[in-house]
Image 1 (cartoon, rainbow, N blue to C red):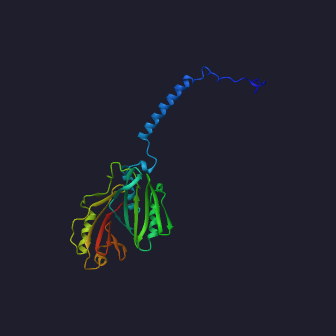
Image 2 (cartoon, rainbow, N blue to C red):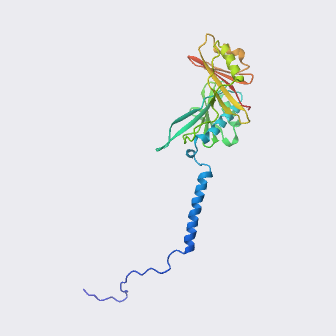
Length: 287
């Protein structure tokens, strides 16, 4: 084999030595360091001051006042219905992620409405809710549904649950517990017009006026507080509607399951269950 070098091709050479002065300029290194420090500082400030942007970053403690205020808004928008506040429920069994546990806060408002007017009342309440909630009512295979966004990822759902009965649920979804829920809710029962109306209804049913269950409250949007107290009694010998009718200043609902009325600005809802009667008496919010 010939070892002659062919013309037209340069002989092989070693890699060229690095060109002197190819390192980054000092000003570019300094600018990079300054930018990294500035970015770290902005990240720290944002984590301390900026509001969270998703539900999973907001705690139940932060969502509690939004939920309580939403309940008050619903009571104020209830119009001619007969409202009753249900006790708050905190469910700690949910998971935010496979590694993180969370909790869900739900509050509800029961509303008695004239039979056949449930959808009309849903639409009326939708129109009365704050515009920022973007509330609306649509017809689903399960009946009309009100849906609204109370802010802070708190969802409001309203739907008929029986003839003459609506239920509104305010739900936070699963989120970190934080310091827990410590807003308006259950508390000790104090004397007030709702306590007088409850004792009056129990006497009419022939039941002794025992200690009512805990008071449930919600802040009204225009000031003041909506309050509900309830008490249960066994079945009575007379017809509950017939016994309560003389007390009704303005009757709203009478069905086999519920009798509801207003008296002197106080709402009275009698839940006629098979084995007992549950009375819920509420002072509402100005509409």
